[in-house]
Amino acid sequence: MALFEPGVGYVDISSGQLKGATNRYVKTFNDLEGLYGDTAAFQALASRHGNEVAYEVTDYKASSNPGDIIIGVTRMEPGKVGDEYYMTRGHIHARPNRPEMYYGESGLGVMLLESPDGQVRTIEIGPRTMCYVPPFWIHRSVNVGREPLVMTFSYPADSGQDYDIIAKAGGMRSRIVDDGEGGWKAIDNTGYRARPQTLVDSIMAMVD
Amino acid sequence: MALFEPGVGYVDISSGQLKGATNRYVKTFNDLEGLYGDTAAFQALASRHGNEVAYEVTDYKASSNPGDIIIGVTRMEPGKVGDEYYMTRGHIHARPNRPEMYYGESGLGVMLLESPDGQVRTIEIGPRTMCYVPPFWIHRSVNVGREPLVMTFSYPADSGQDYDIIAKAGGMRSRIVDDGEGGWKAIDNTGYRARPQTLVDSIMAMVD
Image (cartoon, rainbow over all chains, first blue to last red):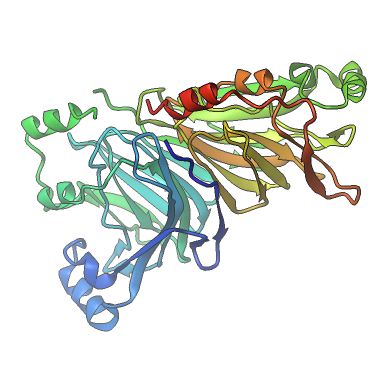
């Protein structure tokens, strides 16, 4: 096995970027079509700001070898579509038994988690909050604050991302919305369709 | 596979601890006998402070399953033994192809890295510095500042630690000492014995 050189980066909180990253990707608002409950509000947003960056990821990835890890930074704009807070697309890992760590740097977020069988959990993430997303949980981060949400993260390099699991269920089971007082609450997503037990069983059996 | 519950912790910078950790361990100065070049200075320190905590680790470990990760916080006192800065015992992973991420929270550290074939690297870690320790590198953190060194970390849950690889070589190849101006420099460890090529080859062949 060949040696990699040690890596060093610097987390720039104000830009929400990892300086020294090997990879960067962005999602524009146009990329997020279909995620939000209020379609009219989304179209109004997209018509004005569709090509602007909704969130960005910069990471340091030495390899995608089994046993390696990827580390990086994510930054998300604050705002709402109707009463629903801005969020990431969300995913389960393609190898679903892979976990992920998120760590709050600035802003206020919620990690929305859903198990394949439809259990929902929410974890609020402020600065210095360390969140462990266990294996097998679909997860999405939501910016419930008024500032950009910046988090660092790490996860196994061979995890991969499966976004379709959410789309096929009509979204995640809960939506994170304004509670009317500037805070947040989780409400039911009325378009959610529970996964068949056979699908749940096949996901939970994927241990490599 | 059973579901784990999501985990949440809080990194308390002032204590250097992860609140919500599942595990904690400490190393006292007595535990560090044999590490430092200046034996007389070490004995003087140990006679006064031998049972005090030199460094502490608090972590969140859901499992040691392949594919899982461990996340946590490490805190090390500032100080020197003779002119050599306080340091951790250091290790290579028992599965040597496992990496580790360290992230500076407060204080000033140096990550001292050594490949099995004796290459040395140093990475200075201040607040917001993200350091990637690649697979196969022996690593040790050193507190070169005047405040406690606090870092968060994550690494694969099945990595394990092998400390003997350092002891068997008479220590790491370099020592991190005061440069005479309150900064740091790396000098040769005169007691270091290079590993035989057969041992180097066997370590580099361990890819799971």
